Image (cartoon, rainbow, N blue to C red; front, side, top):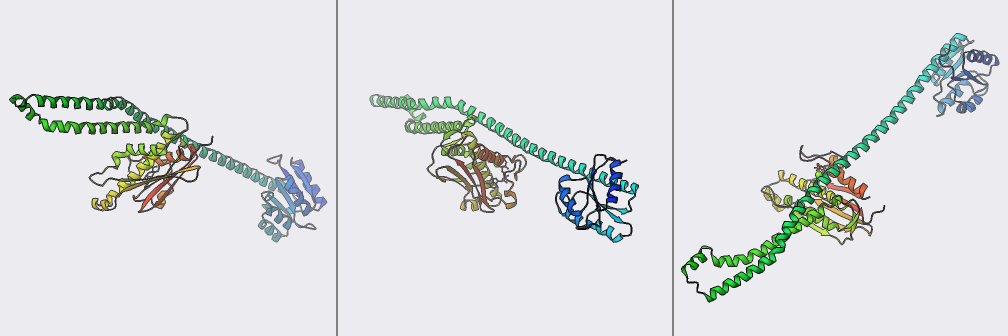
Length: 436
Ligand SMILES: Nc1ncnc2c1ncn2[C@@H]1O[C@H](COP(=O)(O)OP(=O)(O)OP(=O)(O)O)[C@@H](O)[C@H]1O
Ligand SMILES: [Mg+2]
């Protein structure tokens, strides 16, 4: 009994007697049998009927079995179909040649029922197993591709989640602090002018007293000396303008903080890019100042004339923050390579250039003269969780998030140019106007 009854077999033979015998054996065993009488006919039929097995006679007029086999094996659509040669018992050479050409087996003539069925069944079962395996492999490959895609999606979603968490956390805090400081600072700022006016009036009054009443009274004299009246009067007048300046500065910082924390704004808005850069620099100011181990980092601005740019302002500020913080990190890393004096001679710099590439695109280029990025690191810097910083210092998400914000949220480009030993430049390009 055949193992698989629905398999189809093509018999290729010019001998009517053989055909009849084979047909009977195979048909009675439940196979679906077709017959052709020449190599030419076989080549014509096989691609369309796609049998599961071919029994091929060697000696035929016209194209012989070898040539037929060779052509079937050279054709993509037929090369996987197993072929069994049929050859006379004595023709050892033929058997070897047939196997060399890609046949899986041979049957000797005259035909023996048991032998034919045994070999046919073996090869059909092998073929069926092979097909099943191939199907399974391709199914697995599909599943694997799907899994990889899912993994990628998941990672993207995760980055986004961390990003929005980081953003909203920082944004909320900044906004909260700004809000809390805003009222008292306005109270101070708003009253300084009155204080100034009242003080001046009081001083005029004091002056007048001094003129009209003598200062010779010992108690008055003593107090004037104790409080150093002369100095007090002079200093009081200097004190107020500098307090006013300080209050003004706090007000500006509050303004910057509020500007920076515009991350909750879910819509595109036309904003002044330079304002975003300045408020980010303001927040990073404490890191730019000089330190015992290094001189201050100089920020050089080369701002072009830019139109208002449509963007998610808070997210763009986050990108500026990441890139500027990286530049400061990179500059700080050079400290372990140079002395304070050497750094004083070759100061740390961050150069910020902005320009309109054409009327459609705005470019923000941020360069540092740090140690640069080695080539083997460079193609990984945008990978999530890639960092060269010590544990606890870097999460390796800054640039991955920035890349996502610029390319996906704004349809822009983020590139990195770096010469090891000389510095790094990040180039942000975003369209002036967003298409929906
Ligand atoms: N200006 C730069 N100069 C030299 N290397 C840089 C510069 N900017 C980025 N890199 C390299 O790219 C890596 C990835 O930067 P990314 O901002 O993504 O992560 P990170 O700064 O290490 O961590 P964090 O998530 O805290 O930002 C850095 O660890 C650093 O090696
Ligand atoms: Mg970073």
